[in-house]
Amino acid sequence: MHESIGHSSDSSEYIMVIDGKMELEVNGESYVLEPDDGFCFDAATPHTYKNLTNEKVKVFLMIYYVS
Image 1 (cartoon, one colour):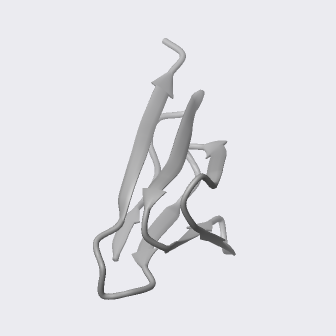
Image 2 (cartoon, rainbow, N blue to C red):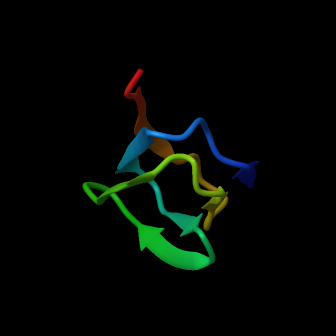
Image 3 (cartoon, rainbow, N blue to C red):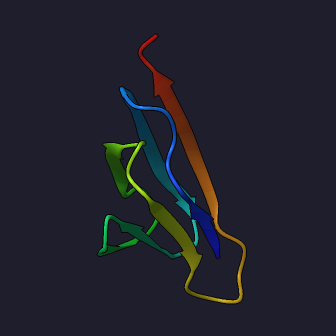
């Protein structure tokens, strides 16, 4: 599990699952993501990534900072 307290304000985080199954928790809401699922959220919000299996999870992750 990876927990993030959030990034700077005016930033966005984009994640797409390539392989595996994971749980993404953003601001207390949980989402299960599987291959080809994508999600975008305010990166300043506290968030957590959790692998739901014993297999590796591969993701594409991008953080966009406005300034």
